[in-house]
Image (cartoon, rainbow, N blue to C red; front, side, top):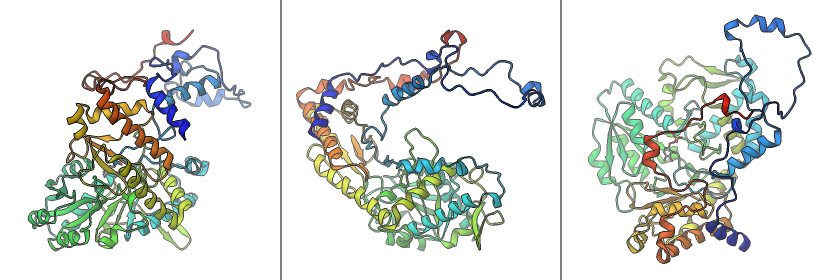
Length: 509
Ligand SMILES: *Cc1c(COP(=O)(O)O)cnc(C)c1O
């Protein structure tokens, strides 16, 4: 443990041993005639087959793939993977994102040929295993959420929200209640909430949080009227604070004729312990890629299933997976459905990972995961709060610290602290969000990190605070050891350079 501490702080002073920043691309490393695996030629005649392909679809020259020996390919990708931070290297404390460790067994099941190779147009009687998995995953999510029906189709949390707002519209229209154009959202909400609501054609009404960081019930009362379609509330909210008055809040919204939607992206803090359905919510989305694993650091595919109460079940997107005896099939015959929100059936690979994850943990394990996520955050909060106070107190699975005092005392801002953390081998926490905390540092350690890793992170944060007092310039000019230093983000946005163009001359001869 001590050993690693020294390594980390030493590393904070010395450059990484990477060949940075100009690692060549695979195309530049390619040399004509080099091969990795030599594939034997075909042992059947191919000429006739080739001729069956219309000439305009045939290649006139071989594809310009890089030519490299296998170990060079492995080295290349290993090297570039080390230039990036990921959860396989160290703690990734990005709050509001649940960057948790994803067990490798999930990858094995998601890649099982029967799943990975399945075509979405496969007839249902030849895809019973996949349909059964989807059905059982839906049943488990309903149980975890305390809801009656589910759709797995939305491919992201934000699209789960969109589905939720469309469900509000379907519900009110069906009752002939067509004047409801407003959706209420607290000011601590994730940016996707107001964006979704506006995109779906509703008006966003922002509700102020009280001094505890919770939804203000008085402000809610004042905002409720017969134009309100519903309320979107995250729990625990984006400050990591558990909304305590949810039953009362849901009752008030229901009395005014509205629906309640829970943004369930923070379910990591409460799954297996308490259920949105029991609190009175009408619907909730899950971020399978956060709470139920699937790596999502690169913005890769996600899944945002939505679970609802019985009153909304018939409006869910088509198709829904149903079970009839021992057979599973897609039910398309749902006349009240809002339609589809995604091609085919959603991101199936993410569902396989979530299914594996839930089955591996079981009922008890799901609960223990939430408890450990909260415990880890409590521990970290106590180790950090002397230097980085918590304006809204300790959160559940994540806490929002402020760098205000440090800035006043030393001129070192939250952004500088975040950049300096990279030198210690950690990813930075979420910064300057949520907006209700100035100089915010929002940290979510997640359940899998060990006490030693949390200690190292706390020591790094506290060391940076000490450094800010003694040598503020060193913090302000960080990072010092990464392949790329501090970027001009404005210029990077204006002068986008994200594409490498293939040029035959660039390829090694
Ligand atoms: C991540 C997140 C979302 C959006 O989910 P995506 O899958 O990124 O679209 C919404 N709300 C909260 C609270 C989140 O943390």
